Length: 220
Ligand SMILES: Nc1ncnc2c1ncn2[C@@H]1O[C@H](COP(=O)(O)OP(=O)(O)OP(=O)(O)O)[C@@H](O)[C@H]1O
Ligand SMILES: [Mg+2]
Image (tube, rainbow, N blue to C red):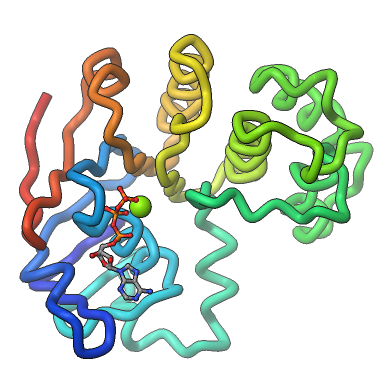
């Protein structure tokens, strides 16, 4: 599903942020991506979302070498990937409900076919009372939960989440992790970037650990 071979990444003329990174993530698996601040977690997720390109090496997604994918085909690939960005990126002019429903609307679905599911999901992430609120008035944790709901609502083939529990309390963090585990059960390939060791201990899963530009895998 995801394969990196000797991937190197540098920004401009800076030092290599990722060096000879190689790993494989099978379909329907669940991995944490961890490592200290500045280790390259967000950069690695951006490579997977095709918003950044490696300086060297091979990245394969859905059995395709991404360097051979034409820019026009990026949206087609991105549609199959749900992302929770570290800075949320909600649309301020849409309500919370509309933000979460957007991927389904864009996919051409009738509102009557998804309305109940979206409402259920909003309740699950604790936003049942905030559906009609707009992002500028949401708290940091509420925005984070809205971003998570939007990323998971269309049951993507791959889910990438960047520090998805950074702004919520431990009880909510656990609830959100259960949502990600549920996606894995439905065969989504999940990668969660986090420093939260408490969460990693509660949900045993293999860890992709970034350190000094190198990546190694640690089994639970
Ligand atoms: N757009 C950019 N231009 C130049 N350097 C960058 C850019 N984005 C990230 N970097 C550098 O790349 C390195 C890895 O950054 P990245 O954001 O991927 O780390 P991270 O592991 O996500 O950190 P954090 O845990 O703080 O979110 C850092 O040294 C950072 O300064
Ligand atoms: Mg980051």
